[in-house]
Image (cartoon, rainbow, N blue to C red; front, side, top):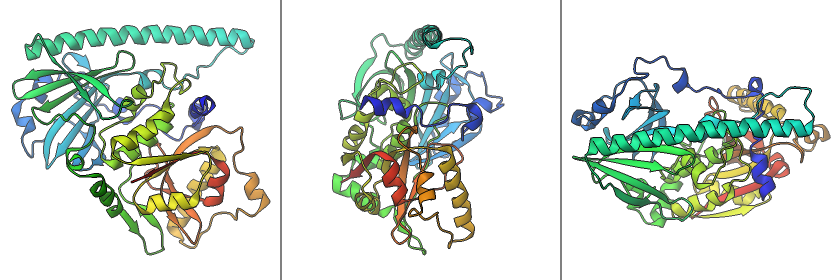
Length: 428
């Protein structure tokens, strides 16, 4: 299993020119007048939390988690005197119910560790140089982490005027459980999430609206049977016979070794869990190395299923029948598969062709040349989310954790069976 985890870091080509997504996201690119402004008092003001209140700045929609609408600010302001890496807003019934400010995130800091090295170094020298550079980056990150945590802790204590904040625990499963610190502030709560290694986040919420579970309140009220019924309601059959799950949206992973995490976060949101890839990286014990090597990513998959009240089966092969059964019931299927840029481009071209001509077909898998073009055992691994299927065409629809790929593409069942390394099938 360690080999699998190590291989996930290669799920995208490591040269920037080959990346199918932006290295620097729109939040970093945004030239907003809010950049660098401290918006603490503005966001703590009572009128910001009234129904219909308009938040300052430009916000990018991220989709829904059950009854909640998620968006993030296209700017990098300050809160509590510290610069925010990402600011998310959670609305329910047209009313702000939570602001989630991420101040430190190891995934964004380290990205993929693939720095260029001098060409004249031998293998041993290259390894030593990599270790030296990585150790330097780790020291830099740890210093920034501790400085930010100290500043935030002092700021939260000062603004809440409390000497004894409340320690709380959220999450049902041991793997996903989070220890948090709550600072009361009049009719609000400032919740600090800091694992000590990778992530520092503060959630601002009204009192009584911070749950002790990752589940959306609307989903938490339902029993397992009712939750499964909601998922089935999201399945549609189009005129051409394609069966698919509606409203599954990619969560772009950026320049991070997170394809397995972002794919899982997509499924988690579909199940009604307010869990993102950054907390999954913490729970999966990702190391601050710019890779997935040494993490416990596989343990996250059954934990997410259990947190939502469902089950999950893992297999080292792709079972098309099991995948269709899960998808027909509204459960996405995640496949770790061998990846190649050439096949990725072919599936992209075919998606365009099929959109213009529903009679278009993928290459015949019975042809030797076609099978020879599939990535082999030495190819890097990538995680994809299956969202639908077409029986007669023997095709499966899949989404990636890449920006700009928000519409499912199609792959033959034969190619999936030949290239899948691990398959995660969720079920009631």
